Length: 140
Length: 173
Image 1 (cartoon, rainbow over the protein chains, first blue to last red):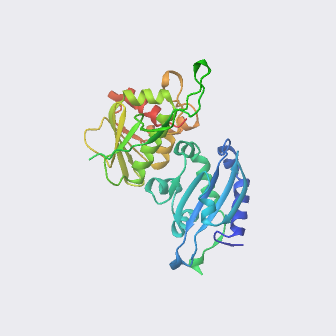
Image 2: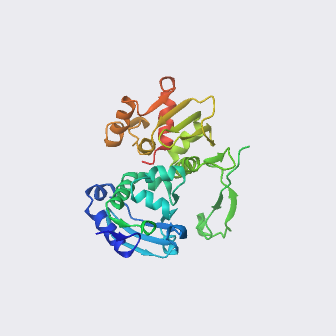
Image 3: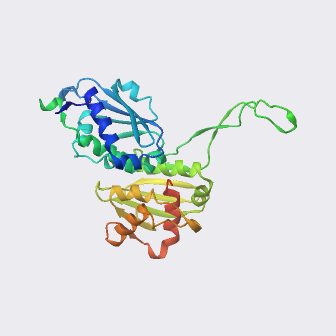
C-alpha cells in the first residue's frame, strides 16, 4: 500500500527498507553520523511546507528516521537539500543521487571525504527509497 | 581571474602548557592558512568544481603525505564526467591548485568516465610504495572500466607517475 510522500509512514517504511538491506548493512559499517534531508517546499506541486528528515544511522543500521521541521534536519552532521521535485526524481529513480550532487541538483553540507568514502552506502539508501510505494501530492 | 579562497585558522591554543611550567596566554590569531590553497578560476565554480576542490582541500589538510604530494605536483589534469556532460580542469601548481570549470587546453592528463567511476577513483586504496591498489573490489572495478573503455585516460603512458600522485591526493582512503 502506498504511503504519503515524506510522512511518518514513509519514514517508517524507509527505515524498514534500509534495515532489510544487506548491502547497506555492509556498506554502512563504521558510519556514525546523523544525516538530514531537507525537502524544500513547492506549493505549485501541492507540497506547501518544507520538511526535514532526520536519519540516525549507525554502523550499517538505521536506528531512527523521523520526519519533522526542516530546521531539525539542518542540525545534522550531513545535510542534503533539494526541492520537492528533485527528491521525487531521486525516489522514483529518475535522478541518480551521486550525479545530482555532482551537478548541484542536490546540495550537500558536511565533510566531503567522509561522504565520498560511503558512496556505496548512500547509493543503497537511495535505492531503498525507490522500493517504497509512494503517493505523491502532485499526482493526486 | 582566480578567486582566492582565504581560510581563517586559529593558531595556538589559549592557556597551553609551555616548557618550564609557565602558562602563556596566547590569544587566538586569525591568519591566512597557506596550506592546500585551492583557488577557483571562475566567479561561479560549478557544483562539480566546488566538490572536487573541496574534496582535495580536505584530503590534503588532513593528511601530511597527501600534502607533500600536493606541494610537489605540477600538472594540469582534466576530468570529464560523461554522464552529466560536465568537467573540470585541476591545475596543480606545486602547493596550490586552480580549479577551472570545463576542460582547458594543455592538459597533462585527461580522465573521461562516468560519475560512479569518479567516485570509485576517489575510493581507491593506496598501497605499498604509494601505488593505488587495483586488486580489491573497488580497484578491480576501476581496472575493469579501464580495460572496457568506460574509463579513458588520455596522456596516461608518459604520465603514470603523475596519475599515481593525483590518485593519492584524490583518494579519501
